[in-house]
Image 1 (cartoon, rainbow, N blue to C red):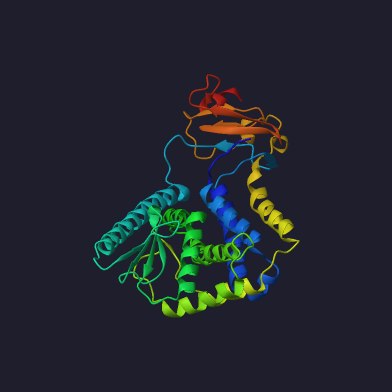
Image 2 (tube, rainbow, N blue to C red):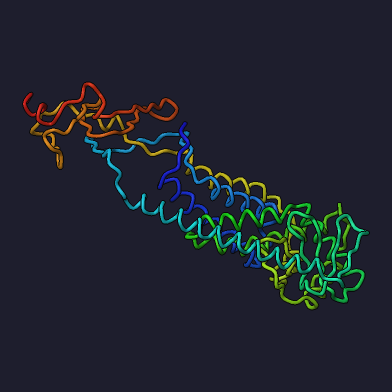
Length: 365
């Protein structure tokens, strides 16, 4: 079993992530999907997409042999192929995106310092976490890692305020602020992967749905209809936030129709566990297969020099005969076997004592 990163493993991860992101987006935007998919399936989709992007590696548990030419040619010199250029551009773009991300965090911190210095702010301490009320806060949100809830200075009713604070406390318990930071970091790293931006927007709705669902369960004993009523009235009172939500766990109550419709129509479905298993298997299976040269089909009888074409090689270049009867110039890892009985050998025509020059090989014929 070999775990490695390559253009193949990256392409597989991006392709599967794109398909899963489309399914995730449809699940959150197509109302009929709520009658089929429940929060458990959305959880699996969300986690699997993150795992695929965080670990774009090929596991290679099973080896699939493919036909290949018996003649191999590599180069010891650094060649800037498309893959090399792509990696360099990717790295430079990621560094730039991360720089902008940390600049946003610093700017948000400046705004927070201004809010904390507000002499008219109020601090409510009769809750599980500190609650700060300020006229400079436009929407309810959770303050980063300090676990402080920020509320706007709006005339909420007691029921509305209770529901808001319960909602924000659940965000803290779910560690949504860390999840949002992780997604922002992934977006910064995969700055070129366009479907990821749709995933980021969908994930914001999903995190709100997950909190909503948790609050109306039997453990919390909150009335579904009282909670829905509070969602609607609070949304009417809130204004758009002036603080970037990449750093904060924010309850802006956007996509209100989606949240309300989901809470009214979504229930646990008996087939959800099977559907979640299918999604997980679909995301995992392509990465456990490794496509390698077929050593059995590669076997060739020993050929004369006239039958072997050494295109582009000088007479002084070293070549090495390998086990399948072919010739290798340069350095390569050549695999043989099948499934778990798989072996890889390293060959280097420059250092192997049995290597000979093209001229010497021609003189032997």
